[in-house]
Picture 1 (cartoon, rainbow, N blue to C red):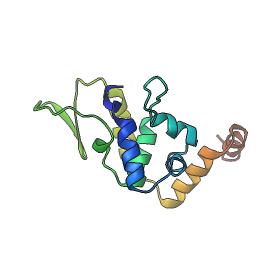
Picture 2 (cartoon, rainbow, N blue to C red):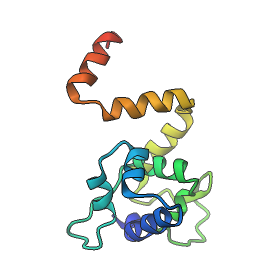
Picture 3 (cartoon, rainbow, N blue to C red):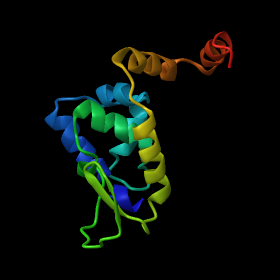
Picture 4 (spheres, rainbow, N blue to C red):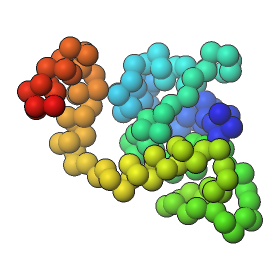
Length: 138
């Protein structure tokens, strides 16, 4: 994960600067605390990486620009795709994630009430999720 080589250190710095616990970050992202611990692991063999949705959750809830969390190479390439606060080359191997990110950003703008519903749904057990989806007719 070339773009997340220093993510573990950057996340810890942002978390500590904001006086946030790993549990706080886990709640923001709808994951368990162990997952956040693995994101911050100093041993790369034990480290895992967040998905695009989790990266966005961290950025939104900590008011941190995405470029502060990912490793970007400075480039004078004029063929870059411009996103708010970001610049990526069309040839980067992060293209799939960026396409997903762009799609989600343009499609999703949730109210606070919708965000709370989503947080609760993510924390629900698989069985409870299935029941909710049945009630909603899905």
